[in-house]
Length: 328
Image 1 (cartoon, rainbow, N blue to C red):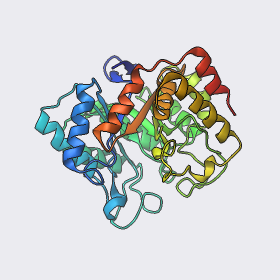
Image 2 (image 1 turned 90 degrees about the vertical axis):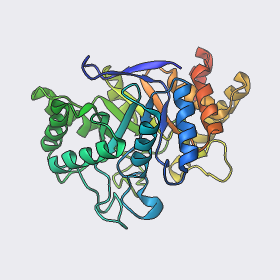
Image 3 (image 1 turned 180 degrees about the vertical axis):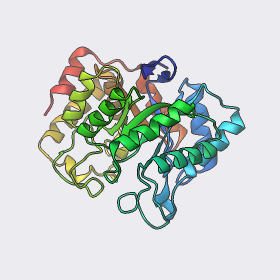
Image 4 (image 1 turned 180 degrees about the horizontal axis):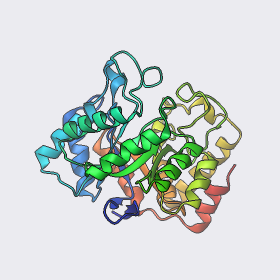
């Protein structure tokens, strides 16, 4: 396994594996036995960066979520896991009532919600300190200052380490970080957005983000990342839910544009040249790039995890990487 530093403050920064494990469906779609087996194998391989959220997976049973955090808590206790494993979670998108969703009825990012939701996450995970806590989605009903101060208060108390942000417009990330910096408070240091080799159109509302894909790592967001070397991008859905390789998983409609076939063709060429799978090439492309990107990939079986883990040691040549970058 290889590792990367997230965060800049010596008191809170962590060394994490360059491949993060998504636990979104653990405890719901993925049963406990399988989930434990995947977690055990990930740790055995040197992985130490696991991602969840307080609302995973509310859509499975029409509830409010919490299954993933609860399962991770049981796994931590049963294995005696301590601070050596970095578990990241998120708040702000938990439905306020069963049968609703995070689009129409989210918990939001008020100071009160931040404090109460973080406490619930700590209880489910069985830990006194959340290693990395994200603002999951935007809440424009609350001032950014209130949200910034709410998160900073948890860091000051020692119940949260690093702060992160997901699915926010780049200008709101910068504004929140500026507010924190001006007040001498900790700000967001880890950005979690959807990012993969194939690029979606960014002008197409997708139902979840009506102003366009705020969940995607747009060119604007990637430019911001280049300008701020202290930031790290955690790339969720790097394998597009299996769409690269599975006929029963078509690409989302926002990938239906002229650039997609060209990038797929180069991707398949590089996979043949390296003897690796298409998925492994995508993950290796992210891991070895010039930007600080950590792919966040889920796995519903140990076999899927093994395929992903092999990408850590896959070295693409500069020429192969240039071809992948240039295809359009």
